Length: 235
Length: 235
DNA sequence: GTTCGTAACGAACAGCGTTCGTCGCTAGAA
DNA sequence: TTCTAGCGACGAACGCTGTTCGTTACGAAC
Image (cartoon, each protein chain N blue to C red):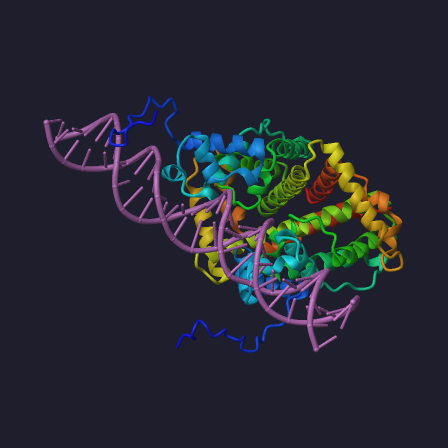
């Protein structure tokens, strides 16, 4: 039975939590995790909260700010040990792996991360750790600043690449990571095999080696390159 | 004066070139250069070509493919010398700087690049150069593959970051790079100065050093880290 | 009991990528 | 020369997007 239109329908005790920035960020992160960045729209968040998109703008300036907040929320999961400058290399490696792992766990938050200049609370907390560690290990401030910056660019960049692959996997209908890798590597290999060997002898010759590695090995290899480079600059 | 509607307006010698993939890619790149990635839409390209958006889809599968093509077009500008394995480090450095320069010149093509798995002709050409150089310098194929991959991730990642800043500069109305840097660095510095020094002593203490460097120095510093790391792995 | 500030929100705007169905031209067959 | 098949071009539309405007409804303060 429809209510008579002249009778204002009194709301039937809305059980929804009151809107707040925290709730919005929480919801955004949940959507990101479950369906990826492409599914994270203002309308989608609003819908999840049983309201219209306009309501969000009282708590969040725009989508960009929402993404920053979601990103900082994720960074909050990163656990940092006490600094031990004597073991700076170990600690930096463990830190990078931890960040990489946290970013990978949250589908493609990295895609939102690389576009932001981090100013959230957790960014600073992490910066203090890495920068402090390098300083205490004896590095000059400007070098420490650059080393930190390069390291984080590398970690986030690699995670970004990973999330692009993840999005493709999603789009191609597959849901298993190994299956996707096989499918993808197979396509690339087939493409490489079609190349004229006289123009591209090296690529043609080492197809298997060019395809071989999965993401984790590559990430660790590059990380070691950077850490060794930093070590060479330590006093 | 509007023409009478019953009189079919014969087209007044349309001076437009016939549609083709090449023309579309060309136009896309022009828009990208002039107004950035955000302005590069299918509709915008079509408009530039005096047609509707649907017409493009006969020559280009979708926007993603268009971006790949535009990216490969840009890579075509990269000049590569003959390989000289004895000078691999020099050549790799020069190569990285060249790629960085070309990407930077085309506003924010890097933003489109990092999202793509490169399979265009020019990608392969460049891959053959870098990979071949490392092999000929004595590296094992799998290591060479990873080193190449990490190097290109770094270069593109840094260019990506740069283009994000460029987009912000654009959005903030400024048009001079130095002016933007000053404005931006000032804001960050002010924000850092507000931080509680007891929680973030290192960041608070070295604000100037954390802000100081512009993009080019940082890029070269990280590049040298990677190259040194690679050198340490050369036989 | 009235007023006021403000969170909430419905509706709309301008733009997006993409698809469908149709139109008009051209090249080959009859 | 006429007919037809194929195909590039494209107008219109669909279902999205982020964001803004103007109004509503409600709780607190006076």
